Length: 258
Image (cartoon, rainbow, N blue to C red; front, side, top):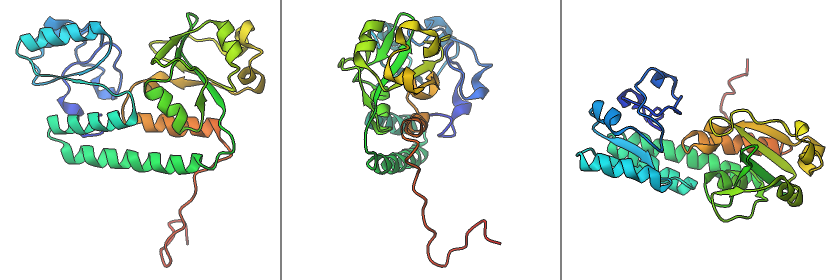
């Protein structure tokens, strides 16, 4: 978000899982996003600490920092609507409100175009999104990943109302997903392809070859790239639905015209 707002130069430290934008790679590491080191944060003398809401453990260091006089802003982004609110608030906090508004409007326009494109879909495939394996964890009905699936013209076949669902391979077989998405990243560093999982070879997604690896940071971390994820997944699920080309206005010159 800060990179998109032109404020990446204001970042003074990162967690050990943060890799983007590339310019932050050499910055000090203050621990994990769930267990940041209070003293390491204080050593950077920050004007502002940004923290995503999560499990109870994440709130403990937040309160500790606040007691030490540090300004901490905690955000929740479990949907595109919440993500847009976060971007606007971060823009306000960093003196980048106009840039934040431009970012949000651009993302909203792309999602509207994607919604119109997916409205032409004749069928919506049942999708399974793997968060972690082999101790299988899937995306449930809550959270931004669930909305990405819906915006991309799919149906999340995991009916659990929570953000994550612990499932057995037997349950996956029962769900009969027509598409199987495997995120690869810090939470799922070395997942096997479906072809190397004997018990899942019979599910429709494996039989049709509709199983794909995707970038965890693009799909599971809320940010401007979340729209990229929805557009990418739409292309995988509905390759027959190409983005509609815009006809140039009458009299306009085409850039490829000689």
